[in-house]
Length: 370
Ligand code: NAD
Image (cartoon, rainbow, N blue to C red; front, side, top):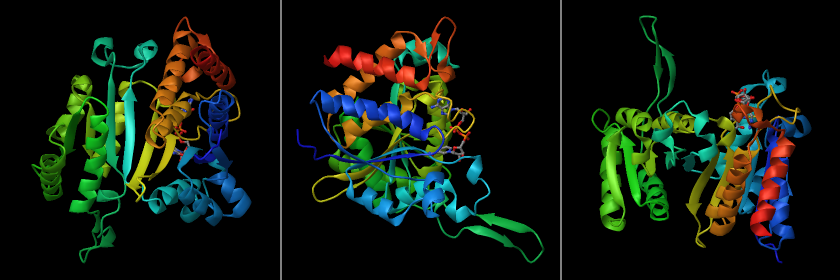
């Protein structure tokens, strides 16, 4: 089968390569079964790239990222590189990828797998069957706005400034991602800001409403203040389908929603750019967790967040919906067998290594795909 889907695999540091190895097995399985094939190119990023090239992201790697259909990213960072200057820290490699690929929409699903209901701190009835998607604007707002900085005032006090700023086009492009995605889900978007106290929030609300009225009237749109949204997420999270919000509020609310599911080792994410003339979006998929130096090299990491990131890639970059479903079902079935890596361990379950969890998923894939 001709492989015309180009993936750049960047395992990175710490547990990155360990979890990515298990994802590689799933990709190989698809290829062997002649279900879908991919051209996978692997390269270095983060501390591993610094050790070899003196930079956390080599020019050549950046070029490959721009040219491929999707980037699959493991994790970067570790104590070995903690004392490096800011400009060459491993994390700068990821930030450069996000910036130069202009990945402005960050998708973080909060999905509760039935076998893991006990891992959440919330009551089972609140989170059972939960499936929400938070879309965070990733390249604008407070984290990038000018003016910014720390100055010393004439009276000797110091003053720190950051600026919350959004333009119409920045709001509309992330709004479009939210409405399009909602159409493939339960058709509901909740747009979140603080229009009551911030002009940028007022603009956000007005532009979202205008976009909705002009192009997406079939989708149900509601607006909510960010502080209320934080409360609603823990009070009744199932009221939401797609939440779209700015960079700062999205940072906080996506972490809050993530913990509804109980475990960092289970959380995938996608970061998308604008579609080009052929409709192809630049995209990077990665687990939410970091490089976990405390367990790196011990075959103890949970590979499921990275495997679920692959499922997001199949769904959003390659429109391979059934194949994405197959991966997600295999993950769910593996959990149903009672195997657990130590981050999601529960009484009465069987503790397994990274490789063994990979084995369980592969066996379940085999059962589904024959
Ligand atoms: P972390 O996510 O690496 O680890 C937090 C805790 O969760 C640790 O106890 C770790 O063992 C555990 N954990 C994380 N992923 C796990 C998995 N898949 N399976 C089992 N347990 C898991 O966050 P941290 O400790 O704050 O950061 C460690 C390093 O990772 C730092 O250098 C940080 O800068 C970097 N980091 C990188 C990214 C990224 O690459 N996107 C994200 C966050 C942190």
